[in-house]
Amino acid sequence: MKKEKYNPWYLLLIIPFALGFTVALLEEHFYFAEKAVFDALRLMSPWADLPMKVLTELGSAVGVISMTVVILIVSAITKRFMTVGLPVAIASLLSRGVNILLKNIIDRPRPDFKVFAAGESSFPSGHAQNNMALYISLLLVLLLVVTAPKWRITLKITLIALPVIIGVTRLYFGVHYLSDVVAGWSMGALVATFAVWAYFKIYNHLKEKKNAKA
Image (cartoon, rainbow, N blue to C red; front, top):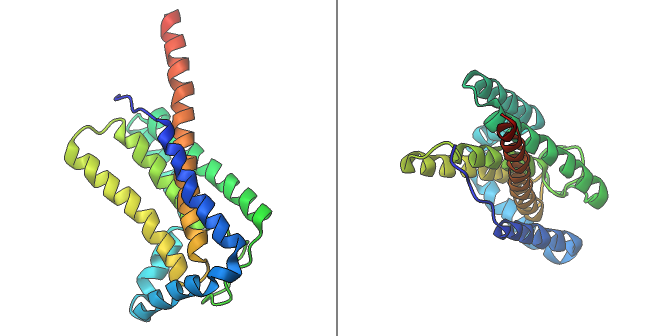
């Protein structure tokens, strides 16, 4: 397995979250700008309604759990459970916990222009955060084993684009402000990076300790 270096520059991922949080605190000053994003996206209605609905459902809690289970099963079959499936599942679970905590602390109301009702508070977007955490953690662990340049590029494009598009669907339906989604993307990437880094720190330490005893 190729060793991937994780450096402190990843901490810069907190900056978009901080910006989103600032906008949320100063909501009355940015309301019209954030509403303008919704209005612009709704120009694609009604032809975009169905694909947007499918993608937003893919990014739901059920969708994230289902995808995580699939990753666990496939990684077990391919004998990469400990290096692919488990770290992705941990990152996904950690992100969900962090998201619930942040929502309860910040407790921002949903936008008044939402197309349909949505539970929980608005900041940060659970769809944006949890999908970013899931797919970025998957990307990080796959980059440890995939060496072919064309496949690495394909993985990066696909696994970054998917959570970004899912986040956009939440803007399209007006169930989140842009600041909610940007903060969700940022926190999801941060949680994924930390979870994978911490997991392999412990995993490699235990592996080296086991080999030393052998």
